[in-house]
Length: 330
Image (cartoon, rainbow, N blue to C red):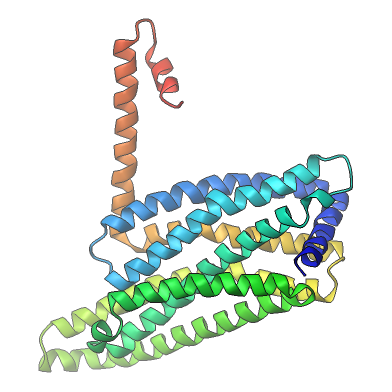
């Protein structure tokens, strides 16, 4: 089954390289560039999230999980996927059988697995914010730290098993991916619609509650609204990046040898990878503490580089300052 799946995907890649070599080259270059962006930005966000104190504990764990999966996509999946395509593009022979079954299968397993973890984490964030808005005071007792950790472990294991099942299904793998994404989008959309309705109802009750209770009620409601809105922007980003891939998998299921469908599918792949670079920007835009922590980290790195450059300039005779700056880059 795995070898049949590998042969199917290898045939699609071979057609793309044969008829769209410039497109394939452009695809590889873009992936290498945004792999660097995703790696650096997610490392900075992980450091910032680790120091953040104003973000709710459970949401912080989910955001860290999303940042780690995005980091894995940028530092491992994108370069590996691009290297395979670049090697196939640079090979004069049209015989790419040595890529099967191991190389293609492992590469696509990592792509589906880590992209799936990111997507399901976004769904988990939506569900967590829904519980925070609807449960109120019961949220802390029901959604405990231990349950969140167990849920994240279950998410990774379930994604791995689902990915293996999708690859093993061969002729129905596109249907499997479309089903998972469609169910995920439906769950996330319903969760945010419910959040919107609850927040709208709470807005009409806040002022009356303030007269009965202390000021913590409206303050807490405002925090829940803000955190739900912030996670909603992550959902919008995922919708833009993941939804095209759902449509493309449907097209490839209809005809996987149509070159226009294949090229469109690779554009959809790039958009899925792009979400790993866009999510850190959303964090920095919506969370002021993360933004400030990232700025401080970047300033520390810049100061450390300047001090190292100054040290080399003072202790290595004849080395100009610009040479010291160049030297510290290695």
